[in-house]
Amino acid sequence: MRMKDTNPIQGWIYRNGIRPALAAGLIAAGIVATVVLSQPAQYRDEIRILSAGNLSADEAQALATTPGVAARAVTLPALSGYNLSAAVFFRGASVEQLLEDGLLRLSVRDTDPGRAAGRALTWAQALCAAATAGSATAGAGCYDPNPVAPGKLDNFLGWKLLTAFLLGAVLGYGGAWGKARWNKKENASMAKKKPVKSNGGETAQALIRKLKTGKARIGVIGLGYVGLPLVDVFGRAGFSVVGIDVDANKIEALRKGKSYIEDVPSARIAALVRKGALHATTDFSIVETLDALSICVPTPLRKTGDPDLSFIVNVTEEIAKYLHPGMVIVLESTSYPGTTREIMLPKCEAHGLKVGRDLFLAFSPERVDPGRTDWTTVNTPKVIGGITPACLEVALAYYGRAIDELVPVSSAEAAEMTKLLENTFRAVNIGLVNEIAIICDRLGLDVWEVIEAAATKPFGYMKFTPGPGLGGHCIPIDPLYLSWKLKAVNYNARFIELASEINTNMPRYVVGKVQDALNKQRKSINGSRILVLGVAYKPNVSDLRESPALDVIGLLRQKGAVVEYHDPYVPEIRHESIQLKSVPDLESAIGKADCVVITTNHDSYSWKKILAQSRLIVDTRNALGDDGRDSEKVVRL
Image (cartoon, rainbow, N blue to C red; front, side, top):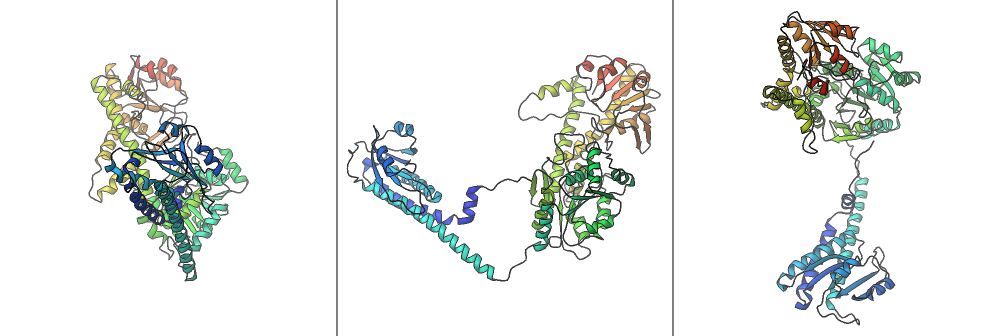
């Protein structure tokens, strides 16, 4: 696990306190202001703060005799605790010479004696910085239009400046040392008192040790597109993992070492089963033997558009029977802000356990993108928010052994809102580009040309593409969870609801395109044979969840079309009234179809061949590219 390092300056202030350094700076400011304002006008032409770079006495003397530089070298004895061995006072050196020698740190030019106070402030700031650093070797000098020849150092101003610097440094170090001694004494005094048990206390620390050493036993409830990859990741991190699901078919497959998710190869599942690192079951009583538990169950919408939290409620009530001290439970299922605290927390505490003391509860949103290989469960940064600070600490230890980067946030609600922001961002932008597609159609413009041209801007633009609607387990649903929650506080999430309205109506818009295209060929949609190509919600996966192709098929059938489909990843559809199997012979089906509707652009399709064999195509994904743009039998979104 990787987390951001602490700033070293913040660390120094935390250890020693800033007040000693500030006190030293103020004292030095007063001394320097008095000195500068009391000097004759001839010394007010220019002030420079220089660095002598920890010079030895010999080095300082050699530097003092550098051609073109009139200077005085003062040898100081080594002081314990300071890196100050010599100070050099320059008179008459040009700015160019000082820059060339790498000595000039600060130069203030002012021929008006009335602005001496401003120069004094600049000196004070430099001395304050030196005192705070506590290890500076510095010299200070005054420019004299009539340089004094080398000889006895009789510049009273120089001595005062050196004294001011040393005093500031000593006070800064002395104050910091005194602060540290006081803290040490105070801590020792507190240690003698009766210790106060912190949230989580020994229970949290014992669990953290178990998690960090890999000795904890992990459980994952819900073994779908989110849960099974998580089982795989924890197993490969060295944990003993229990997978829990109510679907007996999934459990049987896992026991045989077989995966049903494309992102998790069967070989990895089989390896975990062979070495005893994975056990799959439908029995929730096994929770009693676990140290950590991740909940990855569905959170769909009801027909009314309200959140359906029945899966979270049922699972929480079931596991509550078997919870015990020294457990961490993390919800990964997407929901509205407050779900973890308002729904899970009371049920977890129903049997006398206290969250934050006996057991630990957190929310960490899943960020799975099925079919993706560059960003996976392991290397996608994971956001985590706890019900209490102790809950967050334990949850970080839980995921820290398996996930590359963790992103802690202040609360479970912040983590819940993070997930909704991510998906609302996509939903709103897809809604925008879908409306742009409709606008371009009305204006007789090619939306795909416009999008590609806009995408050439290297800043301030992010490319989104239109399509037949939204699909997947997150984007079509998650923003509506937020919209629903906001109604409880009398707020109407207008952006979210408008984007949802546009995206939800895209399948109907596509069917309108099909109907218009058939009309141009003097055909009615009623009775026409239509072949839908690709029904998964995105290319190269078998995931049907919320796929817009299902709505397109349903609407076409409502209008009397004879609909078939082909998808190399989805052998059959069983969704509400739709019970279909993928056509076995793609070429034959294309030849019989009055219209081919491309709803998912799988890479395995030969688009040039499909274009050549089809009578009419409605391309909602720009799968045919330039070939489709130039073909009279292709209608593009």
